[in-house]
Length: 248
Image 1 (cartoon, rainbow, N blue to C red):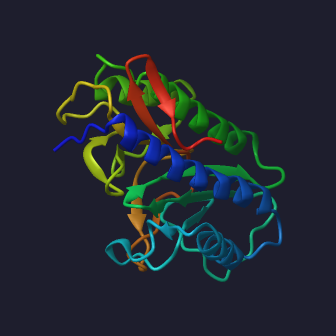
Image 2: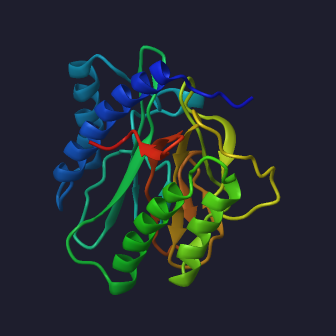
C-alpha cells in the first residue's frame, strides 16, 4: 500500500528529518583522521537523549547499532565498532530517527583528507545522482524517471549502480512501499503523486556492482573491494515539485 501523507503529516516528518539533519551535520564535522567509529555511536546516543528522539535503526530487524558507518568498500550497513578512521578513506554515515511515530532517513559520504581522483569523482557523482534523482520526483512522472536519472548520471561517469539495495518510501515506518530503485528495473513503474514521501538513496561503486554481505549479517561490501559511496535524502512530492525534508 502506498501512503500519501497529509500536510500535517508532512510537517511532522519535516520536523523529525530536520533533527536528523542536525545530527548528520554534527557527525560530518566530527569525522576526521584518528576518530574511532565508536565515538560516532556515542555521539548518536547522546544526541538522541538530548533531543528526546530514538534511533530508527537500533534493533530494526536486529540491527545492533544506532547508525551505520561504512568505510571505503563497505556500501551500506557498516558497524560503528572499534576501528579508527584514517586519512585517504571515505566514510558513509546513514542515520534515521523516530519521533512521535514519524521516521526520518538520510545519509552522506565524506572524503577524509586526500583520496584518488577516481574516488573523489565517485563521491561527487554519487551526490549528483541523488539530486538528479530528486529533480525527477515530480507529480506525473514515474519511479523509473527517478531511477533513470540516477543510473544515467552514474553511467556517464563510468561508475556502476548497486542493484540489490534500493530506496523506499518512508514516513510511518522506516521502509514503506514502494521501493525506489537506482536503475530502471522490471518492477511496477508507479506514477508519482502528491503526498508521497520517498527516501532516495543512490549507492554507486568504482568497480563492479557485485557485492556480498559480511559474516555479521549486515554490512554490504563490494566483491572487488573497490570503493562505494552513498547519499540519501527524504523528500516529499508536492504539486509544485519535490521538497527535501532532511536538509537544514
